[in-house]
Length: 139
Length: 139
Image 1: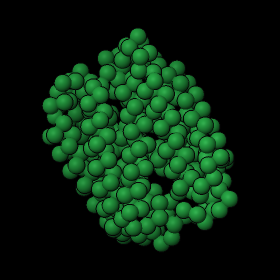
Image 2: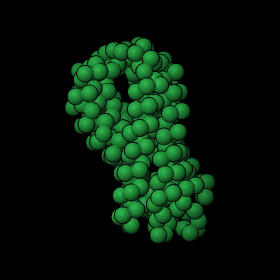
Image 3: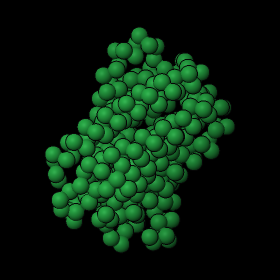
Image 4: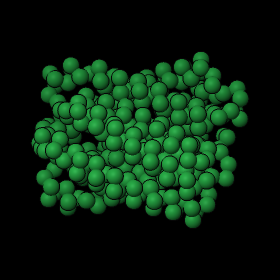
């Protein structure tokens, strides 16, 4: 494991995930969240728990690089994008379950999935461009 | 890709994920979930969304099997359980973010984290034990 490149890839992925999450969920989807206010914490409460968002996004970036760096996915930008798409498809299955149990509008489910694809594809491209595993895992 | 073994592994993973989800999230965590009833669909409404829950489990089992088959072509319960745990960590990051924006209790968060780790780890082990490609070098 090349820890220097691992760290750079992690920081770059985290910065993108943080900015994308802020622009997409905090700005573009703001009106849709406002329509389902009973499902969300009040803004002040969310801000007091903001460190959980940072921790969650940092964890996501770290584990993404770790899976990629373990050689599971192979190397290069294409492999990073492939891993991102696979992870997002798995995330969509989770969203189906959330949609079945929570009174979310179907529109939000679709928009989360579109945003998730963009997030994971770009994260995969960033990680794949920066970090190149020595060899793909074969066992 | 050995499609016969893939299909058997997928069905076994689906069976485990569905039964585990029903017991862990549906039964053992039922009381904890009811601490925030406003977040969930009413029982009567949930019935009409049950197909989304089943579909979510099918999609999850399929892509988890595909990830194991693609990224751990030699198979093996240990290697696939490891990949499963790494995938669980991705979704635990997401659980942290949900905790910050939705009025979940810490008990729910902890239950989801433990559930994710067990579910993905064991499902990965099941898939790895069943799916062993005849050509381990294939990617």
